[in-house]
Amino acid sequence: MKVWQLAIELAVDAYKATGEFPGSELYGLTSQMRRAAGSIAANIAEGHGRETTAHFIQFLRFSQGSLKEFETHLIIASKVGFLPDSRFQELADQSENIGKMLRALIRSLQDKL
Image (cartoon, rainbow, N blue to C red):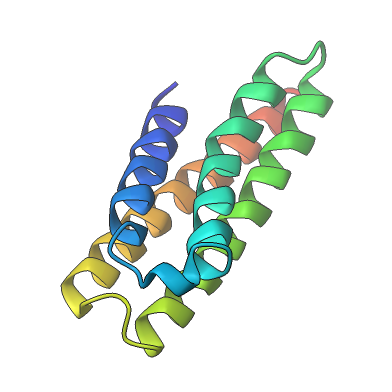
């Protein structure tokens, strides 16, 4: 599933980007961004493994929530100077693309109910 693959890429990129954050943020913003980014793909996978379309949609919505959480942490990291503008924009663009794909997938699945 393409959206899952892109979510994995975002999580990997988030790990790389947060690896450059100050060590004092290891249990703060670094941990929160990594957890939120990983949860996007994990919820897609968990939902896909569920028995019903309705459950899959529910987990896709959880994934959307994790995506919004990641985006919020991303903005904070940028505003406090942990991310250069170019890196922020790259991650923000990835997030936006995943969000569009999640919304389209949810709509598509809802049409099948």
